Length: 96
Image (cartoon, rainbow, N blue to C red; front, side, top):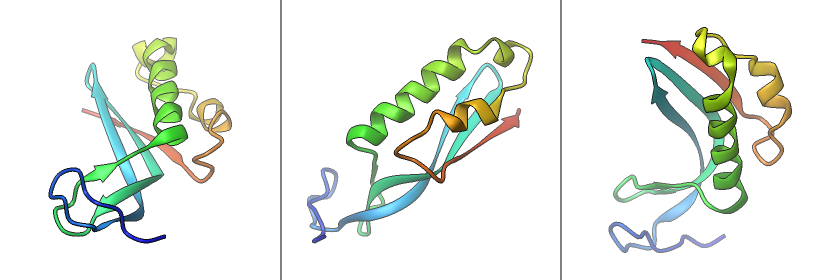
């Protein structure tokens, strides 16, 4: 795949990459590792697109409504089973 133009710096330097996303809420940080993305090799802008963005959003909604979050624990195995596009993703909680 040829590099795509970056929406930030407008250089044609967006390339496929694997990134880690981190979302903090109520003193708990959820990290989603091994997420397919596009990253600009010039300015570092990272984009998650299409089905991957929807799946990340679905994961965050599930975690937000997950009762275990209120008790500072998650059933990570159950969340991982629901990931399809991000097959090798791993979830990790970091307590602040």
